[in-house]
Length: 87
Image (cartoon, rainbow, N blue to C red; front, side, top):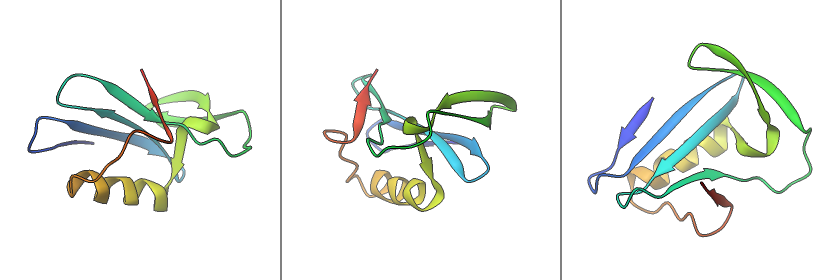
């Protein structure tokens, strides 16, 4: 799913089994993905775009966190200065 902000930014969300990959592209073209620094299992496999994909657990969000990010993005309050990795 992709959500487009009024300023031209976008939020891409995909995942399965309660884990979600999120990519933020700001209006200036810069991109960020979440980076969870808590100690978690190294790799997990989830469905992304209908394909089984193995990713570091540290870049995946659980459902409550994903919903919070969506609300912050929708309200124009998503701060990528901390907890996000620039791509």
